[in-house]
Length: 271
Image (cartoon, rainbow, N blue to C red; front, top):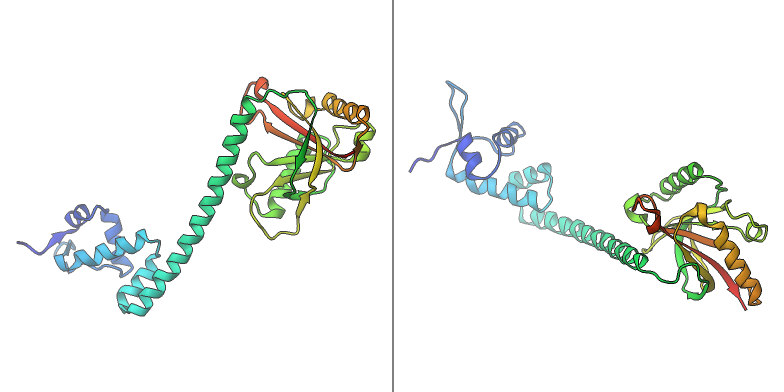
C-alpha cells in the first residue's frame, strides 16, 4: 500500500480542507512528509494521520492552534494535563452561562404564554411580592426616544447585553408624580436580573404588598390604569408607600397586533 497521500486526498480522508492543511504547513503545525521539488506538490504519510487527528481532537476541545502546536512540540504529559484542566474550567464556565441563558429563555417563554391567556385585565388586585433584584438608572424619561437612549446607557453602564434583559425592562413613576396625575414622566429605568452580579447599579424592588393591574396596551395607554389604581387605593383606605413600577410584557417588538400587548403597573401599598 502506498504511503504517500497528496494534499487533496489527505484533506478528503480527514474531512478537512486543502486550505487548512496549507495553513498548518505555513505555521509549522503539520508539515508535509514530502514536497516534490519539481512541482511543489505536498504529500503526507500514514504516520501523520494520528498527528492530524490529535490536532482535530484538541481543536474540538477548544484549544487554540498555538496551544496545540506547543503541546505537539513538547509532548509533555504534565503540560497536557494542565491544558486539559484549563479547558475543563473554561467549559464549566460556558455551561453555567448557557444554563443562565436557558433559564432566561424559559422564564420569557412562560411570561409570553401566560400573557396571551390572562383574564384579569383592567382589574385591580393585591399581590404579595418578594424582593426583586434589578440594575437601575435614575434618569427623567418623558418620551420614547429618551427611553431608548436611557436603556442603551443602562446597558452600557451595567455591561449587560440585550440577551440578558430581553423582556425584563421596567420603568418607575415617582409617588409625587402619581399623586399629581403626572403618569407619563418616569424617574428611572431598570432591568430585572436573575443572577448575582457585581455592579454599582444593582438595587432592589421592595418586598411587600402591591396594588396591581394588567391591561392591553403600552406606556401611552397607562394613564387611565394609574387612575384606576389610585381610585382603588383611596376607596379601600390604603396608603401608597413607594414609586410605581411599570413593565410592558408584550409590545410591538413581539407582535404587530396591539390586541396582544400587555403591560403591568404595580404600586407598593400598606393598610
